[in-house]
Image (cartoon, rainbow, N blue to C red; front, side, top):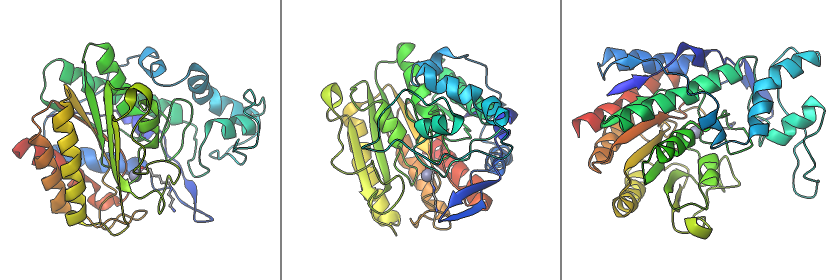
Length: 343
Ligand code: OKP
Ligand code: ZN
C-alpha cells in the first residue's frame, strides 16, 4: 500500500490551544505525522510518495471561494494588524446575531469562518493544509489508477472543516476533497466511513443532501463530547441525501464490544450501498490512552478494524484524522493498515 506524505504538512506548528479554560500545549502537532511516517517505514507497509499539486480547483469543489481566500490571506492580514502569535477568534455569529457580510476587521472575519475557539490558525496553516489536501488527492489518484488501497498521511486533519468554516484542528476537508475529486473523475458512488472519536461534522454537512456520497460516522455521543452540535442518531440526511447519512453516537467509556457492534452495523450499510470507493476517515483517538478522548480501544483492536474493513472488498483510501496519544499513534495507525493488508 502506498503512503502519501509531504514535509510541507509539518509547517503548521501551533504552540498553544485554548482548552478547558486554559492555554495548554497544542495536541495537533507535527510530531504526530512524523511518528506515523516512521512506523510506516519501519513496518514496510509500502513505498512513500510525495503529493503532487492539484491546484485550487479541487478545493473549490468542496469549499467556498471566499473561505479559501480568507485562509490563504489570513496570516498577512493578521501580522499587518500587528499580531504576532497564533490566532483565535473571540466573537462568533451565533443565532440572533445577523449573518452579515464578512466583517472588514480581521477579528470579525476570524469569527465568521471559525466554529470553535480552540483551533490555532498559524503562520503556515495554509501551506500545510493545502499540502494535506494534495496528499489526499494524490492517494485518491492511486486508487483511480487501480491500486486496491492507499494511505493519505494527512495532517492537519480535515473532518471538522465544512464548506465555509474551520475548527477542531481542521481547515480543509481532505476526505471530502478526495471524495469529490473521485466523483468528478467518474467514480459513481463513494462512501466515507469516519471512525475518528469525534463526529465528522464537516464531512457530514458537505454531503448531507446527496446520495452519491454516503457518510457514516461512529463517534462519541455529541451530547457528551465535542463537537456537541452535530452527530446525533436522528441525523440521516436530507432531500436527495435522505438515508445516505448514518450516525452511531456511542457512550463515553466504549470499548471493543460496543465499538464492534456499531462497526458491524456500519459495514452492513456499506454492503448495501456498495460504493466504488471507500474512504476511511481514520482517527486513532478512540484509543484508551488518548489525552482528549474517552473510549477504551486497545492497540490490537486496530488490527481488527483493518481486517473488518478489508472484508468489504472495496478499493479503500485511508485518510488520517485525529489521534493524540503521540507515542502510540504510529503503532495504532499502522495496525489498521496492516490488519487491512492481512485481511
Ligand atoms: C479533532 B479531531 C478538549 C478540547 C478538544 C477539540 C477536539 C478536536 C478534535 N479539552 N477540542 O476530530 O481529532
Ligand atoms: Zn478526533
